Amino acid sequence: MKTYKLMKEDFPQFLSLLQEKGNLYGPVKSKNHYSFEKIDDLSKLTFDYTRTLMGLKKFVTPPKYKVKHFDKSGSEDVIPEDETNIVIGAHPCDIHAMKILDKLFLGQIKDPYYKKRRENLVIVGHSCLPDENCLCTSTGTDMVSDGFDLFLTELQDFYLVWVGSSKGLFIIMSSEDLFNDKIEMCDIAEYTSWQENRQNSFKTTIPFHLMPDIVHLIYEEDELWDQFGEKCLSCGTCSLVCPTCNCFNVEDKILIHADEVVRERMLDSCTLPYYSVVAGDHDFRPDRTKRLKLYYTHKLKEYIGKWGQPACVGCGRCVTYCPVGINVKTVSNAFYEAIQCVREVKKI
Amino acid sequence: MWTSEHKPIVGVFGFSGCAGDQLRLIHMEDELVSLFTTAEIKFFHMAQSHQEVEHVDIALVEGSINTKKQLEELKEIREKSTFLVALGTCACFGGIQYLNEKDEAFEERFRHVYGSNIKKKEFIVGEAIPPQPLCNFVKVDAMVPGCPIEKDNLLPIYTKLIKGIRPQKYPAPVCVECKLEGNDCLLLHGIPCIGPVVSAGCGAICPSHNLPCVGCWGPYEAANYKSMIDKLEEIGVDKETALRKIKLFGGSKAEEELEKVIK
Image 1 (cartoon, each protein chain N blue to C red):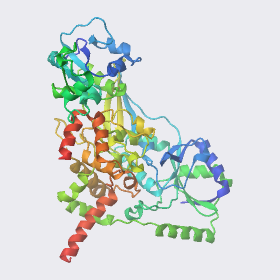
Image 2 (cartoon, each protein chain N blue to C red):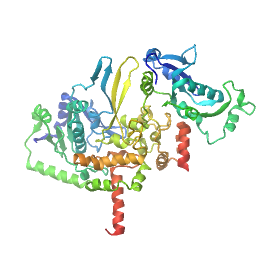
Image 3 (cartoon, rainbow over the protein chains, first blue to last red):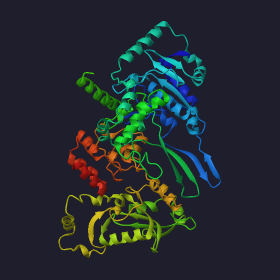
Image 4 (tube, chains in turn orange, blue):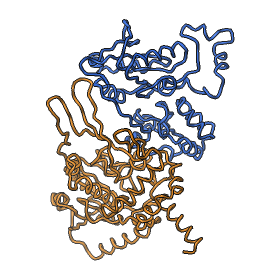
């Protein structure tokens, strides 16, 4: 991996360079939160933020999109057009989430719609500082070494620019005078000190490494699950904002004008009723507790069995946005505390 | 459900409401010609002068049932139709006219509005009865709530029906559309939004403009009223106000669920 220095006074020029290469997206404040939006006015960009409402998934699995078009002559895939979308400001957790989505959509069976959108996307990461809802040190996703094209670590007077792909390198090479590949020892010292400070500013940790076993063993403890099931609004927020949740529903819409059908995919949520309805109208999870169990066993246990890591990247979106406080932090803590209580009483 | 050899026969019927849902059908200007050419519309009170009802394949029924005469007509429509769709919040849940149905005696309210000299039977529209949604009297095959309905919700169901395909229901609350519109939750900012207990379909118009959802699309099938009330109380809304907010468009469905919760 090549690394360069980009002086802060050259940063606006770097942004203009990105704008020349494609549609530039980045974090902007919108109403009460932050969101990756298309940037026409560079002054709207802000990098002093913790998390956007939706992560990078909206670029690769948009909330609603057409996948097929049918008429009497046959069917046609609706593949997105070739275009370069550059998103700047993604944090390490966002990039880890993208790596998880890549594993799912670009594994043995490649999803053509995802593939095209992913190929169109250039990710320029940006360093971040945590708030009290960030859990990424617990999920091991606080640092990132691949999955991006460029990554910027913001230091006092300059950015350290880490190159993660040939696409990223081409951007650097197209304007070499902006970048300096001479990294001095004092630069390294500054980076290390910044990274140590960052590590020390994490306030929340969760025993995530124990969660797969705990969730598995606690599966039948209905009382523990019910306390969350009774509170859950089944509103879908947790999974819609989760950067790794990617379930979609498929609907064929018949157009009224002619004998044409459009097949659409839209983001779905396993916390909604009828999510688990199968042919014959049987519903495997008619109640809220069962649906929450599915969400958390998948997120904290099943995914690890299949892919070797949790499907949680510790971004803290569920912690921030669930209106009734049901999230990976409260659920994990409740289970862990219940066990600790027993340990204290039984002196185990 | 019916063969595609002949065009399906459609009837559009209206009971008590603002007639906004029928008007919404007529306002679908881009689709209007197709609406009348893909099906044989035999009865459409608002759009046609010639009316006849024999058998209809699809009945689109707007409004709540407020009189005995309407009730008889509804039963007749049910008998003569294969697939009955409740159109709009009034038909699906009772609408705003259902409000306070359980709290105050109907007779008392009737006298308050019309005076004590008039007899209920004297109305040409029939003897008044407490307003109710269609499903409290007859089997409703599909519900398209809305105040008024939105064509993006009706058309996918309607186009399936005219091809003889049974539509699948997939209820979601306003919150789903709200997140997809890119909003964070108003409840987190102390704004008393009842989106989590309200049917989606409007595209979260109000929350997208920082206004709390008032529930005009009626109750969400998986609504958790207990948790909703707790949350509203947590942000400083008293229980009475919370209940009033939920009941405004909640109709008989919300009333039924709330009774269980309050117990």
